[in-house]
Image 1 (cartoon, rainbow, N blue to C red):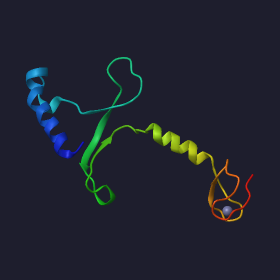
Image 2 (image 1 turned 30 degrees about the vertical axis):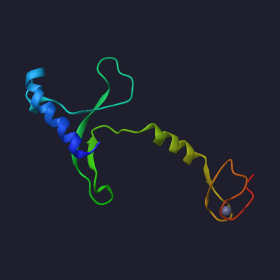
Image 3 (image 1 turned 120 degrees about the vertical axis):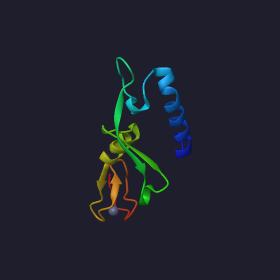
Amino acid sequence: MNLEELQRIVNEAVSYTKDVHGIEAEHVEVKLTLSEPSIRSRASSDVKTAYLGLDLEKGEFRIDPNDMLVSSKRTTLHKVLKRLVNCEICDEAVCTTDNYCSSCGNKLN
Ligand SMILES: [Zn+2]
């Protein structure tokens, strides 16, 4: 999604909220839907702030949640990082399942 698409969706929601929900736009809360189980409405986080990104995030529109959100990909990366050790010879990171260090050729297993 780009910022223009988001603007169009927000503009439409603002124009309909009073007629459809009977609520002024200033009283409509903005939520981020979470991918986790919930009994009633979908699990969500409040939005802390939203802004145009700077430096490495230039060209991005960032929405910061109130709660810490962690993707399942990060969990997978965490598992991969837990399997890394340092080569005793050259100190490069190697996987515990590797037979040889890819940097110096040291026999690991
Ligand atoms: Zn090595």
